[in-house]
Structure formats: C-alpha cells, structure tokens
Length: 345
Image 1 (cartoon, rainbow, N blue to C red):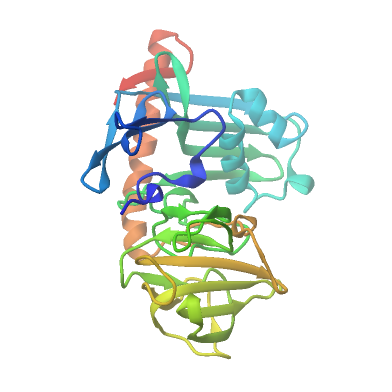
Image 2: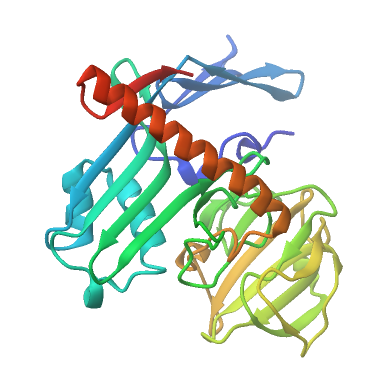
C-alpha cells in the first residue's frame, strides 16, 4: 500500500509544483514518481514490489541573516512590506505584536521596529521558509515589546514560533492544535475515497500520528458526546463558546464524558484507528450548526504559554539570539556593508 500524504504535507502543495510520473515499458504500472515543490528538494518514489519506496533528494541551501529596520508610516502592514518582509513573514510579526499592542489606539507614525531573520537562499534567490528570530517594536505610547523564536526539539512541532520574553505565545485567539506535532495526510475537501476509490467529500483534516499519541482539546468548551459512532469509531465532540463544534475521531481511547467541561490543551483521548479507518491517525473536524466547514477557518497556534521545562530551553535560545545579533551587527559595522551576511548551512 502507498499513501502520498505520509511523505508530503499535502497542505503545502501550490500551483506550479510539478509531478512527473514514469511508467513501466508496458504502460501498466508506475515505475517512478518525482514531486518537486522547490528547486532544492525532490520527493522521489521508486517502484518496489507492490508499493513505492520513498527518498528525499536535497541540494545544499545557504542561509542568510538579515536585520530589517523601519519606522511606522500609516499601517503596520504597509510599513513591514516596505521594509522588505514577504507577506507571510509580515503576518508572523503582526500576529505576535498584536497580542500586546493595540495598534489603532497606541501606535504612532515614527514608532520604530526591527526584525532579525534567517532566510534560505538557493542560486542567489530567496526561498520560502524564512525563520523570524527576533522582533522589537518601540513607541512613545506602546513602550518597547520584544519577541523571540522558540525552537522546539521535535521536528515539525507546532510549538516552534514567536513568543514574548515571558514565554507567551503569539496567539490572540486562544485556539490550539489537537496534537503536539502536526503532519497532514489528507486535507478538507474532495478526495479519492480510500475504501471505495471514487471522489468524495472529506469532512475534516487527517493528521498522521502513532497509536496512543495524546489528543488535546483545541479550546475551552463542553463535551457534547464521547462514544463509539459508527464509521467515526471512538469519537469526541466539543461545543465551544463561539457555537462551533470540534470533532476528534478514530480514537483508541477517550478520557472525557458527555457534559464535562474541558480546557484548551487538556488531554481528551488518544490516537487510534477505530471505525472506518485505514490506519492510525486523527480525524479532526469542525462543524457550524450541522454543516462541516474547513478546519483551516479555525486559526491554530501551538501554545498559550511555554511550560517550565520549555522556558529553560527558551531562556538559553533567547540569549543565543541576542549574542548572534550582537556579532552580526558588529560585522556589518566593521565592513560597512548592508545589514546582511551569508552563512553556509
């Protein structure tokens, strides 16, 4: 058996990505499949017995450190874009600062900001996937605010991102993820049904996870059901103050009961493969009334506040970022160059 989503995050697929399929001489079977999202990485699948063997081929990428500075003129959006940030990078900065700064009330033209970021460079071109390491904003009304990047040890951890010096997340929504590490294997919308082989609406998002992985409530709410529900297997539904209902299906076990109040981040069950399921995973759904809607409409972030052990790591990382910026600024002053340097990865 073969599941493309086990190796490639299908939510990152964009127009312009390429998929090359090579068939056997008789044209009956796939011998090789190559999927390319950016020029530095090729996802190669080669026929092996009745399945496909996977290999990721990567070309070396340079990393470039840059400090961008600017002054507020008009909106924060336009000011960040004028300073040289890409739209996705701009949004990360906005999300972090808006948690502590009331921009319509307190931000004033002339306020200053600074962003320290690590960019990926290939053949002289900037690639997506930059990391914002540090953000500062200073104004007469706002005072000074700083954000630092926390890098969680787990690969693809949803906890990695910008936090205040106190370890508070850049969340202004109070919504979290249902798993501590996210890998999408099937997104919301039309797809080929894995059981019947024809097109069918997928009513949520499937996340890859091992059997027994803890599942978390994404926000405060009340459990409206926790029971075995046909094809959904062991299923929990939670109603939130917004009126939306979140669904967690195919669980191996459930730790809550109907009518129980739950808090964001509380363990409510464990990942399994009960009901109509091809393997261990979490199906996460979002309902408005009786209608399933795209869970991407529910803005998700990793954590409201880092715990004690994470704060120990974060404190060391903040210090390392400060030292890195100090060295970077000293080099650019001595050389008289622009505020950037290139480091081989």
